[in-house]
Amino acid sequence: MGINEQKFRNRLRPDSGDKLDDYLSKSLNKKVDQRSPQTENESKTGRKIILVAAIVLAVFFLQNAIGNFSLNPPPISTVFSNVITPGPSEDLLNRMNATMIEMGYTGLTHDDLRELRSEGVTATYISNIRSLGFTDLSLDQAVRLANANVSSAFVAMMMELGYELTIDEYIELRRAGITAHFTSNVHDLGYTDVTIDQLVRMRRIGVTPALIERLQDERGPDVTMEEIIRYRISNQ
Image 1 (cartoon, one colour):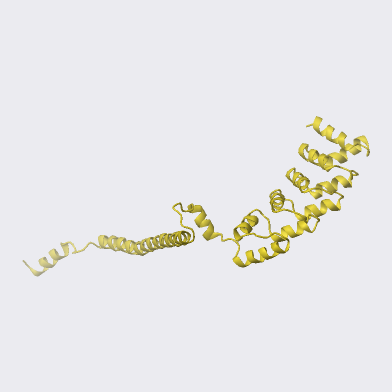
Image 2 (cartoon, rainbow, N blue to C red):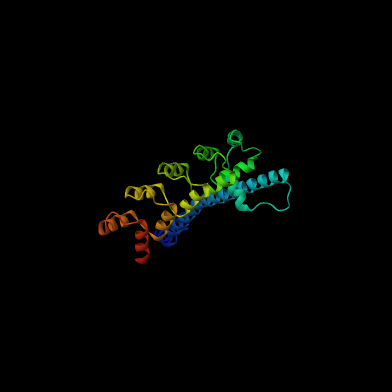
C-alpha cells in the first residue's frame, strides 16, 4: 500500500467525536449546570420558610403552655394574627388605664382595655362623649355608641341643631343612617322642628332635600313634613 493511498484512507475514517454531538452535549450540560443552582436555591428557600414558621409556632405554643397550660391550643389563625398584628403595647394600655381611672372607670384589666379598643372605644372617645354632658356614661353605652358609629362630632352637631337626645336616640339615628349634614339640610329648607321620628322615617323611605325642594316649588313653601312623607310613600 502506497503512502498516498494510506493518507486517503485516513481522511475517510470518521472523526473520534462528531462535532454536532459535541455541541449538543455541551449545550445540554450547560443548561443543566445553569438550572441546578437555581433549583437548589429554591429548595433551600422553601426549607428556610418552613423552618421559620415552625420556630414561630413552637415559641408561641411554648409561651402559651407556660403562661396558661391547656390541652386545647389556640387556632392557627389566632397564632398568626397575634404574630402579624400585635395589639397595643403595655405602655399604651397603662396610660389608657390611668386616664380611665381618672374618669372613674376602675378595676379594668389589660384584657378589658384590649376588648374595649377592639370595639372602637378608647379613653379619648369616652372623654369626648362625657364632655358633651354624658358624664354618667357606662362602658356598655360607650360600646353601643361606637358600634353604631356615633361619633362625638355627630353628637355635638346634633346638639348645635337644637336636639337634646338620649344615648339610645343617638344610636337609633345613626343606625337609620341619619347624619348631621342631612338634618342640617332639612333645617335649611325651613323644617327646623323636624323630629327624630320624622328624620328616621324620611331616611328609610328615601325623602331627600331635592324632593322637599321640588314639592315646595309645586305646592308652596308651607307643605308640611307629614305631607312630604305621605307623598313619598304613595309614589315609591
